[in-house]
Image (cartoon, rainbow, N blue to C red; front, side, top):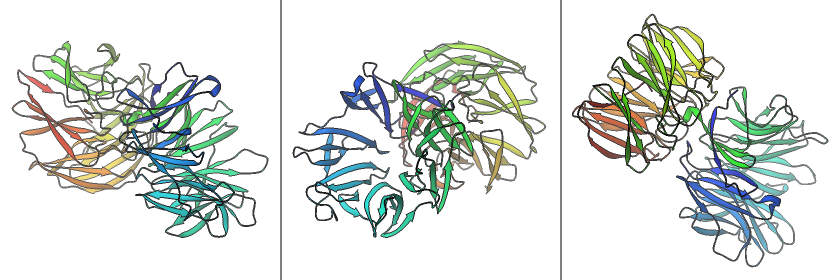
Length: 604
């Protein structure tokens, strides 16, 4: 089965081994932290790669044993070194990794430590809270949290050897310790000074490796004489993670949507992603995942970052990480404006395509990193132009489909790494053509849905890695069919929304890895419903936009990792609202494009 991720590789080749150890942002647009190690392990270095530019990370200080252990969502790096006195210190960075600030737990709070205090940072959460362990040169240790310049020691009462391994968005602290008089290691949660043990009596040891923003911990059990089973833990419940056919497995992360990642050995094992009860195997060792669902690690000798295809950018025809614009002239001419990510566009002529042909959608039908174009002829003929990423397209005929069937959307509904085609018949029948990535499609019937219901959009609303279907009823009722990736859908009702509001587009406007809903009112009012990935939405009003302006599309035109909104005016003027990923938008005027040219508006 093809991977449901599009992988980006990072070298350079002169190093014997490279691995991605963290990624900020989403959809590959943020900073990527890469560790390079020479053959034999004699030399290692760290780079941050952003917008194709690689920056070596190393402080201009008298230090040794320098290592970077993580990167936050905002691009802040954290790690460790030995200072000029050979004492262990942590650090965090400012100014995109150009300024280093030491982290050194003060002796006044380092309870139980004897001698000089050494500090070891384990990581940081996306809010910038840093955590780890302190230990004395003469013995004794404990955990710590560092936030907004303030240190907090963490020591479980009635225990020793406390290590902090994670802090969630509610500031609950997670980690491990050994109860007094015991040789075993168990987990703990510290909620505002109230400690609770995390352990399972079936296993000798419980190791907490980390925690998500929503408080879902993950780690492994220790059982004498056997492999270490992996688990997730939330609200007092353990869930074992056991990839089929694996001799042993290591769980390395959980994203904000609850998707579990790791790697396994034996039974054809490699990296795995566990989502919705299903395991997907990927050809890479997966060392972690960020909140947006990007997986990272290595496929020896290359470092790799895997972007979920379901989150992939709309209309990135040349695979450079920026959405492009596709235009059509009333005389049949077609053109692409390729974005450079900095506000500029380069025109590419696609020639004249007879007006019997209309663009019905775009997508990644063959699983590569370049968007393809789906065409439909007035006689029912259907075809795909597969992009080669360098400006060329190869035509693939899909044959004639009776005009009672219309294309309602495109998306990766089964999470296999290729875009599929969603069809709707005039009689209410609904079907998906699932792509195999090699030019073939398999038909899947979704049954008959009464014509009171119409497909309003598609997107990955729950962050599960598959495209879902957004429906709208003539009475204003709104619902989502959430895909389980195996051909099934679960209905989720969103309630009735007054019919003065219509769905204008769907997409990830805040860069959190979940699709949101863009609404437009008949009076010009515009709003976004931001998905939290768990069935809830938060409304943000964007104000009234004159009805001479219509939403013509979406895309990440500036490399921000969040989708902006493409507008076109009835006078030919075009503009982009570029998203900053935090609810704000900056307008960019593209000028008036006349002479019969119009931005192609395709189903989302």
